[in-house]
Image (cartoon, rainbow, N blue to C red; front, side):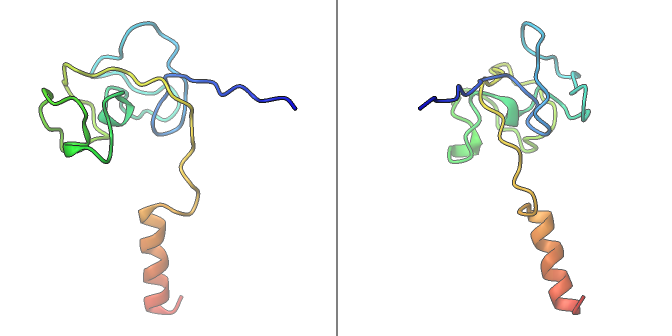
Length: 105
């Protein structure tokens, strides 16, 4: 039986576009595909939704908008596998479904 290799990459948190440049993205860097900011908490190796302030780096200043570019000096672009967001299971989709049920659509 052959095991498939899981490829770890540095990529956009929003669409999965791979970051192929060396070094870290600057605050103004955006994804070439979806134009999302790249130097964001959601792309950081220290980001952890279960940790206090969603960050494992205790020295970092709290960042409220995890998807927006920031000046965190502890940013480290995470190397991980791309897992697309589950289609149809976002908070927005769930809210729309509840509204449809409420109004009988």
